[in-house]
Image (cartoon, rainbow, N blue to C red; front, side, top):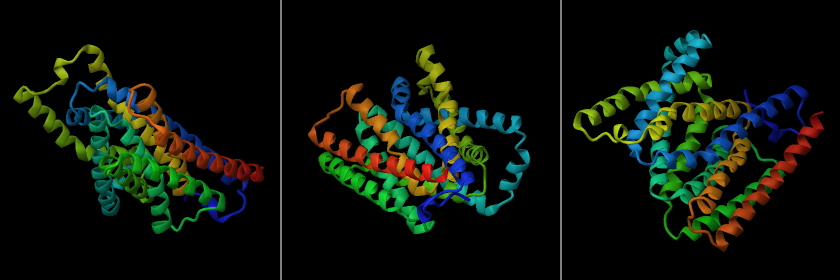
Length: 308
């Protein structure tokens, strides 16, 4: 079971070690996702749905290899025998493929800033879901951090000037994905293997149809892009496994606050690398969100110091 440090004044050494491990996993995942637009821009010549198909098929091959090396067959069989676990994973499969498709489409549509907005909103969705379904509570300092973030996200939303559907789809799908994967009795690699396996027949069928109809783009791109597309499994599996390991060790509210690292990376890439619009509203919102992260970091360091 994950820690619930919001309800205690300090952590035991064992709890602190578990919490630190969760933090490291979460930082690795969100750091990776923060830089991910560089990858998806590099393979942008391939249409989004075709990329998803390659992403899924290469992921399932990698995951099967990982399970075989780790001798996880018994765990996989146990999950496959559980109708509840399979049902949950079927739902998370729909959520994650919707999230992937929306994100990749946004990369090609020059809407990286809107994806960053979606992942700024996502931690707030996680906090709400954690309070509604998992009984998690915010410490006072975390409440202040969330308040800063709410104001910052509100400014970003207002500055867009329209319903940011890309942002909302990304926030809601990943929020519910985090919630359901947190409650499924399956290891990260096993759960993700089942999710990608459920998608594989559809994705392989799509690639076969594209090849038969002569509309596949992958064969026409250069070898460099081909090589990048074929690494989509690694690009997908590594951060999702890290994320799930982190989420299982941390309260959903803590995961939600740490997730601001990913949209911050995307935001910086959108403005300084891809040249998307940036004005004073973005500057104010960005500053407020980082103030919230500063409060959260101070509270985290204080709690970890009390556990020593």
